[in-house]
Length: 368
Image (cartoon, rainbow, N blue to C red; front, side, top):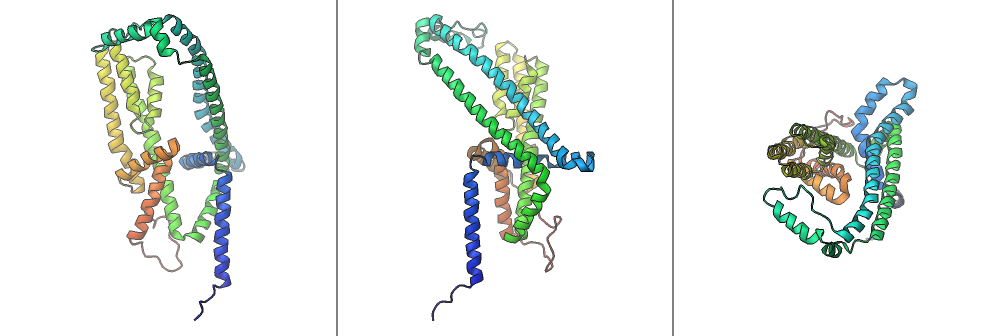
């Protein structure tokens, strides 16, 4: 018997799938340089959507479509652009001072700082090493001779170009965020319709799990990290650490990244120790490790894993693996991808609630 030829409808469906896949791949290729910006805009939109809905309720009906997205996008701009601008200005000032300092050090050497010798245990050894290698102009020239002021200037220009590029990507992120806020509801309807057409109710459940993972990750990483910085900042102020507020802000920002906050409060502890404030150093370091331990082992697993039914191991692997694969953006994409994988696993291994024929699965019926 000769094989049955495929029906025209089946051939058309296969051709449509191939065409759709080709168009999607071509679109991703065209947008490849802007995909991180679009992903960041999606993360911001998901994280700030409850605030956007509250803002919509406060504004008059006719101005909601434009005013609410614009106000919230401007708020995000101020939160990120102002600190980055201040940091860039400070780096530019330091770079202008660095070149003459290197030239001066190569000619006359670098005297050891006054605070080096009083350091306990290692102070005398460090001061001796400094005098042998940096104070003498000959040894300083041998150590710093490979540092060329022209190279520093070129590197500064390259860093400036990279900052401009990143700023352009960030501006595109803000533009995409504005349109996600403005057209988010209609976009969600279209995505749900597409999901139902291609994947059925399973696609909607997976999407809800991924959105919940992004929400939980923002709460578990960003908000908890900022809270860590605030609590440890109280210890900074209590022991009299200079510039306690900026150091606390830096601690909170780095606390978003797992295992990064100890770098800041340990350096602060060393500074206090060099200033003969042994009690203050012990208080800062012990408080920092206690706060980080509680946050990483109790609060974050509950906020992230509890909202998405992810075990702590998968939460940690999603965060660290995402950070390794996608950079800072992976802190949010990693748990979302893990939530999708676990959701698919549960779809295949756990029985779903019985649903009558023709009845749509509601949000209350979906597993969180």
